[in-house]
View 1 (cartoon, rainbow over the protein chains, first blue to last red):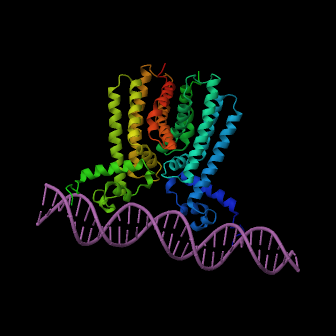
View 2 (cartoon, rainbow over the protein chains, first blue to last red):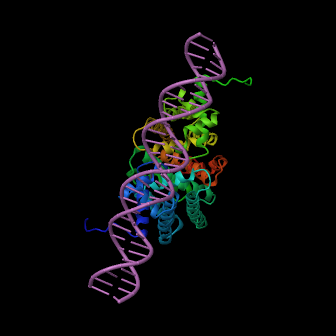
View 3 (spheres, each protein chain N blue to C red):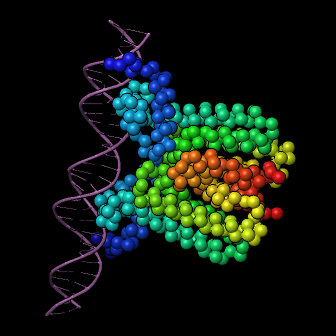
Length: 202
Length: 202
DNA sequence: AGATAGATAGTAATAGATTACTATCTTTTG
DNA sequence: CAAAAGATAGTAATCTATTACTATCTATCT
């Protein structure tokens, strides 16, 4: 037909599939994403997906893996480069906000996976992702207290919960307004209040 | 057969239907709730539901109405009974926490409705509910600033977003731990940080 | 290099299950 | 008895997954 090749190697197709799902999740309810919609966005037929994944859950699994690597990777880098725990906290927040601004479907997928009944693998992956994220926050908050940057009587667990809720609130607000850009623009103001709450401000 | 009546009047069935949906939403992904599951929980056949509701969306619509009345009703009462804006803020928070503790499916349904594509009626009802809630918060926060109970430079919009995010974070944490009771037990610690953030604390 | 064999990637069609919704008949209730 | 409420048994649409077949790529062997 035309000059371009039509058959891609498996790993590239797998990566493209993950991208397609993340893209679709930004536009619609993640649990309503069908294999037909995924294939259509990739320019494939529905059945072709199952050459690369044994099941639909395996696709979601790959997505969760991708999210874990990307998000935690960026977060860890932000932590390493920061001068102090308080600075790291802010860097992590901004990194997180950047990530969900680039991929608005991700927090919705995570939330959606968490509310699945039973014990699916994608759900457990979502749980461990958020747990690992929480542990990093916990460490940061403890270090901040030790350095006197945060309130001495701060409850790190509560602070970690609120940190994640801060992002979640911004996501919700952006869905209300049907405007993804609000996540980024509203983030500094909301985080300023959080910072004052944990004690890292003038 | 037995002594109990089997046919209920329409309005009681409608109320029972709403309860069934709210109950199911606590156990599974709200968008995966089927009319079969609703009917089963009510001890009815699936087709019988459509004697009382013309469509499934009409059922969700009734649920959103129910949530709006109950939640905003309780919130307004809490505001009226509070002595000051800061006290009202705390009363609203605790009221909200009580509500989602009693009905853990509700915040998940709201979140789920918001991420539907298109312009369904249940979605618009969810949007207006949260907007009205936000307006009440806004009023409270402005009043708190005027009275000097809150920081003078507080951004009320950001504070309202964080308020809702605070609840959302607690809901997420409870889903992570698969333990609804954590919403209530973790709430005070998280809210304390929020309060310090907006300036209403020692 | 060029032919070719085998693996990989894709299509089209469809099976089997599940969904919201409906048409018809039966039971209950006032 | 008549009207409301429910049961039974459908229908059409939609979803995941599979099957039979075809196209494309890649490595080997003379």
